[in-house]
Image 1 (tube, rainbow, N blue to C red):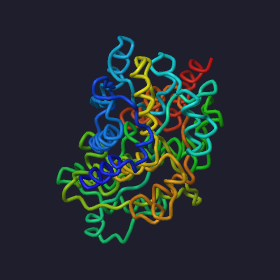
Image 2: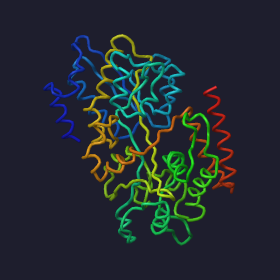
Image 3: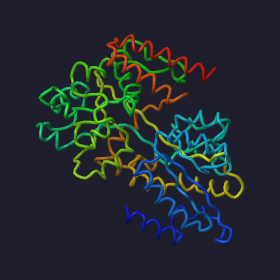
Image 4: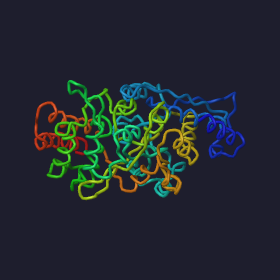
Length: 422
């Protein structure tokens, strides 16, 4: 990473980097300072540090201050600070939160002369069109992500397993071979991690439901359709990992990713953003594979992204500086830095779907997944996640059937959707 930073900084100073075209004609005597906020995730913080250094070198009249908060506190901090005229000028948010930020007037539209909608739609993945409101874009991503299966190659070798599962049946079989318990029957090593509070609610909603022959919503994502035989079968299969097969335990080591990072889980489904953290985990031996195919060979995936937006706090010179920083954050150079530092793929197909990325043993499975991924259009991301979490808890803790638990979840989620859209 130090080499990357030095290399791009050198290019920026020489005026060769893409960021150079965004330079302001300000000087140190009238320097502008803006704030950039995101939640704390080490690899993402490192990436923004590099981007800020490059941008400031090309724009000596602008200083960018990065501020981070724990994920659990982030949305509250943003919501409280901006209306008070404090906090970020440029803010990072999950695409599924956009409605909340727009409704609360926390962010403003990107000016169409600097961010032409037609150009955005020609250059970016189509999924970013969910950020468009009334003819202008409210936010744009630097990178996009898909899901894949991470697996511990050392544990696979110890168990005599040749490679990752290609189907859901093989996943269960391999998970059973990797699971270990102590003398009291307590799990000490999971075959596969689980947690609807992490990425599994996406895995279930956009992948398993479709692989079992259903669809989670109507095409406009305003009506729930997962409470049918396919959705029930998908939730039954998922809950069976713990209740029937005993290859996992919800809450094991608190978070799914923690168990995998500690070498206490054989397999883990997560987003490409996890690559940076796993690369930094000393002693962990791992690899990546595409998500296992469904019962009839169906492949599916979920794609998502975090976006950058200009807040309603930014005005005057700060607005000008924030917009130029936004331009750099969505440039090809920034996307490449993000890929190499965080592991998330560029938000433009021309940069992401290269032969080199497709052939890469780590990025390749995510690139492949983007080709058949679906992006959930959330009305209330946290609320919609919670109803799926509650459904699983009804099964695991109260013994409810998948049919009953899912029927209740569908009613609650439909009420959330109707409350928003109506």
